[in-house]
Image 1: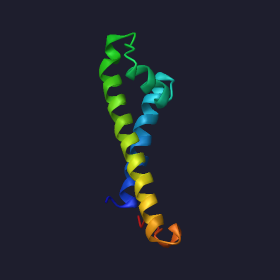
Image 2 (image 1 turned 90 degrees about the vertical axis):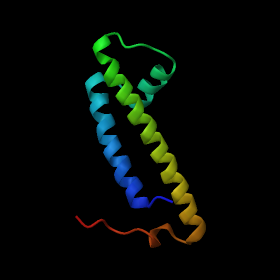
Image 3 (image 1 turned 30 degrees about the vertical axis):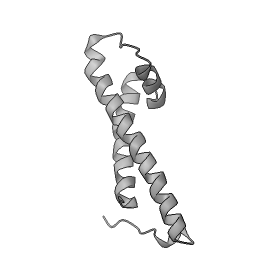
Image 4 (image 1 turned 90 degrees about the horizontal axis):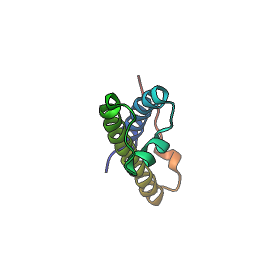
Amino acid sequence: MVQLSTLVRDIHRLNHQLERFEQRYNMLSTTFYEAYSAGMEPEDDAWVLDFEKWAGLYEVWRDRQGEYEETVRHIRRQQPSLFKVVRPVMA
């Protein structure tokens, strides 16, 4: 099982990457992905590579979110308090 700290770090990195696309195209990733998954094409052919990358990042982000939730559920079954496993990250 992946460590919680690794998942949190990955999720934050992915959030940052997704936010760049959201700001560039003025649309939240969830809205974009619904349209992209439904087969909607970009208006400009120059956007195709961006849209493919954005969709891929969103899928990885969604997977990491699921892994995070599963890891938290696993920890909660093992520990009476989730806060017993919380540790600050040393920079």
